[in-house]
Length: 145
Image (cartoon, rainbow, N blue to C red; front, top):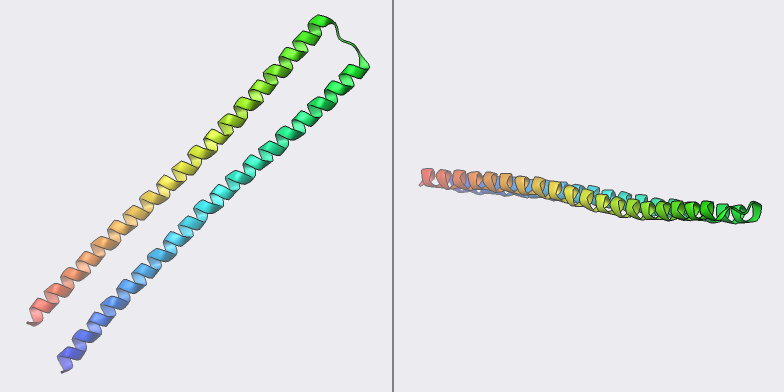
């Protein structure tokens, strides 16, 4: 009867250890997931700030155009050069916006891949430890028989 109590207690301890390990894994997964979400929110915030900056630049450009039209009429060739410069600036701003969004997307993917790799490694470690515990339990059960 005493051997039965010891076996039951050791089995309960093993289950408690497994539950604690699983709880720790869940906590780690949750904290890493939260970090990824925070990073995504930060990227979204930066994107919004870039959009606001673009709007501000466009407003300044419009104001500058208005002031230029009212102050001095430019010769035809300078007006064409100015229009070309503005078009070039607009094209560059579009490219910058596209590249920024591309970079943000790639950063998000890299972070997700890194987190996924960490979680896979942690899962393999847990499975290995669980297998070791199962083997030890089987060996100890065979040894008692």
